[in-house]
Length: 492
Ligand code: URP
Ligand code: ZN
Ligand code: ZN
Ligand code: ZN
Image (cartoon, rainbow, N blue to C red; front, side, top):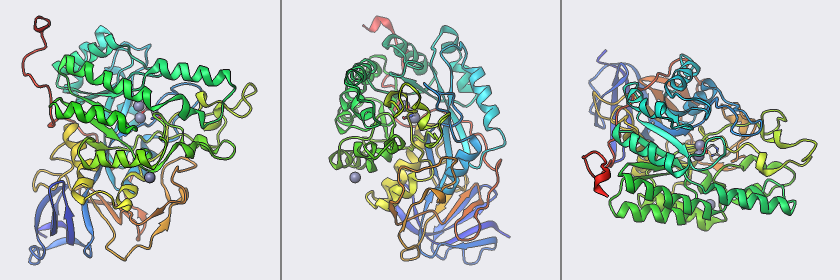
């Protein structure tokens, strides 16, 4: 046969346009994209009729936590690389970038990278890479940045909050400078740690311990101040950054203003900031703990609207999940691990932070029908591939260059709107924050490098653990440092 797989009658959406087209796949690459009917004389081992449905590049989820040690308290990840990547595939995501967490007590990043390779090797359903999470930017760790690049790692994450991970501003400058020198993009979790601690103490004085006070203790102002500070530090070093999981439209304004000045400031938001509010933390009993994440879901629809606008106007480069999986109903490792003799109803400050969402990211965004298709593709796939050095291998349909990673959605009228239930999902978590939400779309097929991994109506998950491979990444192809000269103290 000429090809291994042909997909006919698709509405093929990229970040540039949507065209009526047929796609031919040979081996693990896109071989040809033609106008509809253009492949009618070609032969193929297998043909799929998309029946007029959208076809998008496989999702690239650049913010996933799996198998991390507890951040504080007892919470530990409910998903392994196997179950987390399985969940990704079933929701249309073919690439995940997962954090490889250095501990503050460790002096090396290369050992962290090795250990994380050990967790992921041969068990993933999706393709994967790692962001190094830098908790201790020691001389030795900074000197390892060039070796990280050679090992295919072109991004790091650092934290401005959490006692176990927080860097002070001087350490942030150290990281930004070394990252700049090595063509690395630095992701920053921007919240003002002292403001959070101060608000937490205020709440404790008043014996306010319920899950909803997690939101009170992490006000938008903590995010706004730290976001602006991170922008200043980035501008000072002329180093590109990505502000992760932005929840506040006022923080987004600082980002937009910096972008309009031409600075290499990139930003990320997540579905929890489009679909949840702080009211989701105020549920009967302890239920609200399910939606405890940092930053917290904000006040109201007005905030959601601001975040949607930020996606539409380009402030947000990417829409990632921040999948951070904890069981709910588990007193040892889950959300309920903060319940003990001292706090029989739990204490918000000990609730493991994070929500699952690697599988629901694309269906939620697609079902909302709010973004133009080209924008949907850009923020859920193409821009992440560009920013993290995977483009055009990922996030595009470039014949001969792009991996044959794609999602075939349902054609109009073929899928009845349905209420999401956690039992439909493939993660290892006992809840979804979106239980009962009406969805209008779901991936009908997920294809990874030419192989059908998910066929919703015929077998569901048909791919295997180990089908996913490690991705060696290059430098970002989005905006980088403004100057090509080394940073020089004599410039000041
Ligand atoms: O609450 C969250 N986001 N948990 C995951 C850790 C992080 O800061 O991304
Ligand atoms: Zn974070
Ligand atoms: Zn809303
Ligand atoms: Zn995160």
